[in-house]
Amino acid sequence: MARAQFDREQVIQDSTRLFWQQGFNGASMQQVFKATGLKPGSLYLAFGSKEGLYEAALEHYSRQSRDMVRQTLESAPTVSEGICQLLIQMVDESEDAEYCSCFLIKSQLELAASGCSLLTKVSTYLGAMEDLYAECLSQEYPREQAETYAASLMIHVYGIRVYGYLDRPRESMIQALQAGLTWLPWQACDSAHRSHA
Amino acid sequence: MARAQFDREQVIQDSTRLFWQQGFNGASMQQVFKATGLKPGSLYLAFGSKEGLYEAALEHYSRQSRDMVRQTLESAPTVSEGICQLLIQMVDESEDAEYCSCFLIKSQLELAASGCSLLTKVSTYLGAMEDLYAECLSQEYPREQAETYAASLMIHVYGIRVYGYLDRPRESMIQALQAGLTWLPWQACDSAHRSHA
DNA sequence: GCAGTGTTTGAATGATCGTTCAAAATGAGT
DNA sequence: ACTCATTTTGAACGATCATTCAAACACTGC
Image (cartoon, rainbow over the protein chains, first blue to last red):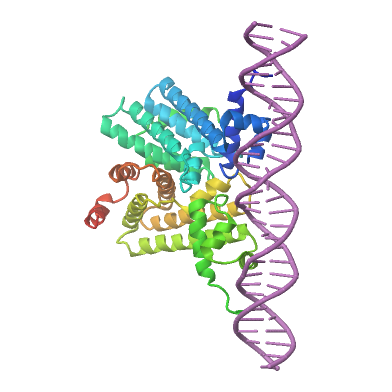
């Protein structure tokens, strides 16, 4: 088949899962070939290098996360309640046996010392996430307050993404979040997440 | 020289710095040989494998961090003020160009999916850190409250260790910490850290 | 000063790494 | 049907990976 290429989106999705789980150095191209079903030549023609494919995976993950957050915040009764929902969802995710934190955070920590060009992208994506939160929060708070809250929120998100690996009881994780993010309407979300648990 | 071995402590220290910066997969044994000055045979006789050496590095780092925290908390006027000092110190560290987060956190994220035996150790060391905070905080708060505060504190520590890579202004990082950890005596430490800045 | 125990040396191992490329296969344009 | 541009194939590349081991060496005890 000449003009009919492989399903690029699917390949990126498969690669994302692999890189997300194993990291850049931990995932070999052999594993990528296996996970995607593609042969070396095809992948290298399409993405140039391992870095190129990783970059595509980062972008895919970032866009998907951003969309998910935006949609949750927009469909929630208030931005604050949406944030509560997202946080509780993150705690729930961390109970999964296959939990593997956040792809962007893992990339940031792994690649920080390597000085490779991927780092800039990662930092940008993480920064964009904070900007999104700050923007949404500024509907409910003055600009400066919203930015401080957004920063505090990001610290908590980063924290959960690490804390989630230690298997602490779910309730104490949520209590810790409530202690740190007192300005969020926890009681509004509490019944919601309890009902389907 | 038969009985006079190399300086084991120094070798572990050098290896720790390398693994801390580059990660387990990112640091090659060749780099270790170069960093420590030892030849393959000596290292493998002493530590058995790359994993063995990494384990020694983790233990070294963990013990050192634990000692540092314990000493800071003991010599501070109060435990709470000691915690403030530690947090501000972490923010300051993150401004360093060679900043590389926390060795235990990086290890946790990198190795989580590998299923190797090092993971248990990492989780234990991180858990011990939280226990230490909880124990100290129970001097000032009832047990349950102390544990919740310790968990919240750990989330903030993890958060900073990631947030520190994005180069945000130092003041806004501290503001975010103050927003999340309202129960800490920030004004007591504020003058101290400002005076020598 | 010799024997023996234990350490250091560094070349060599097989495996696996990321990547390449010539050849085969495919479908569009004529 | 044939041509041609493009994609897929998979064997092969050199580099580097973690690790090994026999030989050289150094110190202790006699």
